[in-house]
Length: 603
Ligand code: ANZ
Ligand code: ZN
Image (tube, rainbow, N blue to C red; front, side, top):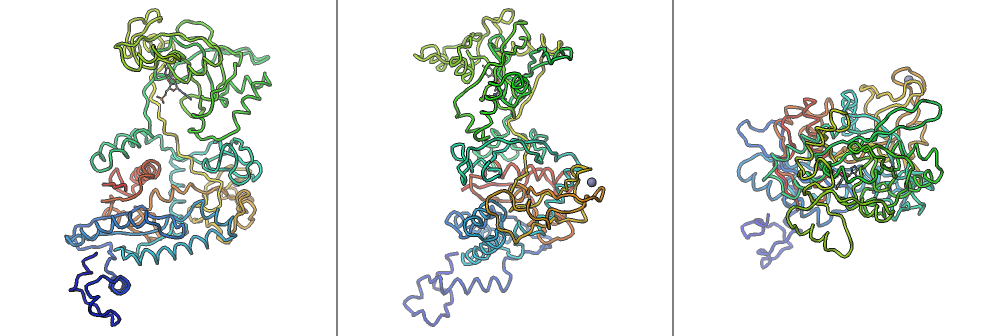
C-alpha cells in the first residue's frame, strides 16, 4: 500500500507544493484512490469468476459494532488485507467480505444507559464504523456486506433451527441460570460480581428454566478427531485449547446400590452411579458425594430440614464452574448409605458443593487418599482416608506427598495395595480386572465422558434473534411454520434492564397456535449471539439470496475459508461452534467438506 507514496504517483492536488511531492500525503492521495476503487468496483468479486481463475477466500472475524474501530480491529483487518492484495497481484480472484456481528448485550446496556433503542444504536454504529473502515482503504468487497440483526440474515438462522428441531439435533430441557430477584432477570455469568447482580446488587439465585439446546455432544468425537486435519494449519495452542474444551475422559461408570424406604411403597433396589477415571482406587472409597441438585440430595432434603437448607444455600451464587472450583468445599452427611460394589460395606452419602450435577452422573466415589478435592473435604469433616495406591518409582510428586509437612493426596497412578485380590496390579490391569468382576453383575461399564456439554442457545434477552416457536396451552411447544418466517424482532424498543421487554409487548407476544389455531404466545427468548457468528462465513458466499440459507454452488466456489484471521480470545467458543455448524450444514446438504477454516491466524 505504501507503494503509492513514491514520486512516480501522480499528484494533482494544487495545494501540495513541489517540495512535498516526495512526501506521502494521505489526505490527498487516499481518498482519490479509494474513490477510484469504489467507482470501478475494484474489489467486488462476482460469483462467476473466469473458470480458470484461482479463487481465494480471505476472512477476518467480523466486528461487533461497538461504535468505533480500535487498533485491534485495524491490526486484524490489515493482516488479511495485505494477504488479499498479495494474492490479487499474483493473479488470483480474492474475496474479502465484511459484515457486522450485530446482536448482543452491549446494545442493551447502551439502551439502559442512554435510553436509545438497541436497533438505532447498532445501525448508527455500523454507519460510523463503515466510514472508518473505508477510510482505511481496505480492499473489501462491500457488495457482500450484511448485519446479522437484519431479518434477511436471521430468518435463515430460524429456518435452520427448525430443521435441526425436526432432526432431533435441537431439544428443550430445564437449565439452571443466574437469577436476579430484584431486576427479575436472568444474568450472564459475567454479570454476576461476587455473587451479586451487577446492576441491582442483589444476591443472585439459581433458577431452573426451560431452554433450547443444540446437541453438540453428538459431534464431540468428530470435532475432536478432525482437529488432526488442522494440525499445521491452525496454531498449536488453539488446537490444544479445543481439545481441552471437548475434554474426552476415558473411565468407568460404577454403581453403588441402595434401598430407599419411601413410605408405604415397598422399598426397591436402586443404584447410585458415579463416573470415575480412577477405578483402580475403588477399594479406597470412604464416602460418596452427590451434587445438591442430585435426586438423592432431594430425597434427603424432603426428610431433613437442615439438608434442605444446605442445598438451598448451594443454589445461591454463580453457576459458573470456575467460581465453583474456587469456592470453599462444604457438605453435609445425608444419613443415607449405599453399598460398596466390591466389599458390600455401607458407604455414607454426603451432599457436597464441589460435585457438579452437569458432569458425569452428578455424583462421585470419593477417594481422599488419592484425590485432592476429596482429601480436602475428608480432612475438614473427619472422614476416613484409606491409601490403596503405592507410587511406583520415586517420582517427584509422590515424594512430595510423602515428605510434605502438610499431608496431601497422592494422585499418581501406581500399584494397588490394601485392595485384597487386586493387590499388585497396575492401573490398566486393575481397570480390566474390576470391569471383569463388576460388569457381569451390572455394576460397572466402560464410559467415555466429555467435558463438552450440549450448547444452550436460549437467552432471556431482547436484542437477539427470536427463537421461532410458539407456546400453546394445549399443544405445548409448536414450531412456527416455515412460510411464516422470519419471526421479526420489533426494533422500536428501549429495554430498562428489568426483564425481557418482549414479555410486555402484546403485538409481538400474541399469536395463534400453528397446530390448533387457539390463542397462544410467542417464545420471547432469543438466540445466543454465537449462533449468528457460527455460519456467517458461509453466508458471505451468497449473502443476498432470499430463497435459501446458502447457495450450494456459491458455497462450493468459495469455501472453505482459505485464511481466517482473528483474536485468540475466540480460540474456543466461536471457533468450536462454527466448526460444529459447518458439520451440521454439511449433513443438511448445504456445504461440502468437514471444516470451515483451512488456515487460521490468531493475532
Ligand atoms: C474417583 C477418583 C479417585 C477420581 C481419584 C479421581 C481421582 P475428569 O478427568 O475431569 O473426567 N468427578 C466425576 N463426576 C464429577 C462431578 N459431577 N463433579 C465433580 N467431580 C466429578 O475427572 C474425572 C473425575 O472427576 C472422576 O474420577 C471423579 O473423581 C470426579 F484418585 O473418581 B474420580
Ligand atoms: Zn395449540
